[in-house]
Amino acid sequence: MTLSPQWLDELRARVTLSSVISRTTRLTKAGHEFKACCPFHNEKSPSFTVNDQKGFYHCFGCGAHGDVIRWMTDQRGLSFMDAIKELASEAGLEVPAPDPRAAKAAEQRDSLNDVMKAAQDWFVAQLAGPEGEKARAYLATRGFDAHTLQRFGFGYAPEGRQAMKAALKDFPEAMLIEAGLRIAVEDKEPYDRFRGRLMLPIEDARGRVIAFGGRILDAQKTDAPKYLNSPDTPLFDKGRTLYNLHRAGPASRQTGRIVVVEGYMDVIALAAAGIADAVATLGTALTERQIELLWRLVETPVLCFDGDAAGQRAAMRAITRALPLLRPAHSLKIVRLPPGLDPDDLIKQQGVAAMEAQFANARSLIEVLWEHERDAAPLATPEDKAGLKARLLAHVETIADRDIQALYRRELLERFSEFAFPRRENRDSRDWRKPSAPPRRASAVLRAPPRDALSAAVLTGLLRFPDQIHHHAEGLGQAGRADPRFDVLLDAADSAATLETGAMEPILAERGMAAPTPEEYAAMRFGFLADAIPPEQARAELAQAIGLLVERPALEAALAAATRRFESDLSEGSYAEQQRLLKRKLEFDARLRQMASARAGAAQSSPAKPMAD
Image (cartoon, rainbow, N blue to C red):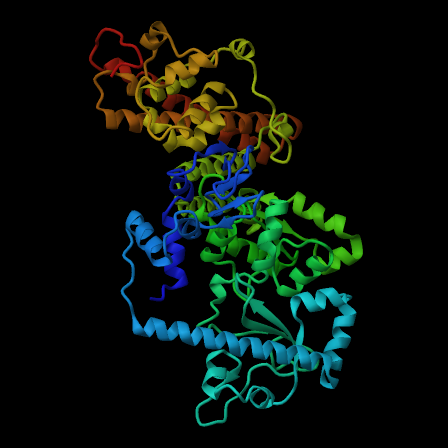
């Protein structure tokens, strides 16, 4: 029976490796891994590790290494198919029935591997021959040493539409076409896909050649792409393949890092400089499957893009692909190189240390997302800023993990509020490029100036209806500048899946902050605090009060600024602006008085505590 690589990957993903190994071997948690004394040889101190994220076990003593299937065959002594059946039963997967067509496909793949190996040998020989002189001259300009040329298998595809057919005459024409080496055109003789190009083999996880990439050498030839890759074949799926993964994977276990660059020549330039943990996509944007492959190696891969507009677009494509997949501790970091430089240029101009510094200073996914959307369009009007907010929230909605989605929403809205509603004083106190200030001590909070009636009423309303905290996170984030109790409520809401009435008072108390007392509550006249009001009406009126709470400081600041301008510039324009804002302030005060007296008309009852059900 032949099982597809995709089915085997699904089986491995559904079974937790540590849970299988722990049935016969005692494991101890050690950071992101588990440790144990190796079951394959006698030892007194543990050198056997199990990593669920990467899906393998490894012994640093005897070298035992493998995945969950290898464990079942090597440690449990099962045959391959018996191991598959037992794991599939545990994972809830059905083992595919024997399929003669699948067996034939497997046999075909084996034969295609022979074709690709023969083609690679021929390309290498052509590079060393007379026709490879132009390719050798190009490689000399890149400065690659002989070891790099041999390790990455450089070759050359000569000019001539039938050269490969003649060289690989032992293989049927149909097989050469199936392998992507020849192109069949209706009513015409098939011809070689790669001609007059510097060739590089693309290998699978076992180091077998499954495809090729070719770089054109004739700069005057503008009717053909600069880089050309093999098409998808039974061996090669470009969306599931990362160039150099079979070399970079082992290197990443030593560095704890994996770097993704834009092309295979970038990978080779980094490897020649001693940076061995780099891979590249193959003519496509980073796919979901490739992200999962990277996450099996490290939790936060580093994506390195050129500093031009195309590199910026590639970064955003990768971010939008990654957002729905984000899960705890798994994300991406982004490096954007200086404009006009690729990794090879940067290393040649500034040295390997400069390249390593770029990787070390890679920026978080959320930071790059914020800066891209902030700079994507002019933000001169309120409508422009509203568009920015809409774009940010549209990205947030694509995140499947609810905890991560809530945290992204909170941080992006805070950044938006800081940008759209800058403070008039001490503007740099919350600069996102600086470390945040340490939290104030409880005693300092208690010495803060008293809050006004509107702020206290909104706080009390949120204590009664904590489910509204999420709905008004942006406005409450701004209110937190004046009353830190709102920040406490937001932090508690972000860390809880559900919020119940009565849950917030103890949280405030732990931070040295008091909720309004029963006496203060009894004196409040806001309608949404009346005991007789229906809950939905109360929530609607609470939303209006939060809107007033957010609007008031901006209105007061604008009025104060207009008044100062009028005092220094006695023009009709400054007077009209001051009067317009004064009228708005009077209207605002009237609305506030109306809300503050709404409770008076409700049925009188004995004062209840804010947290009563």
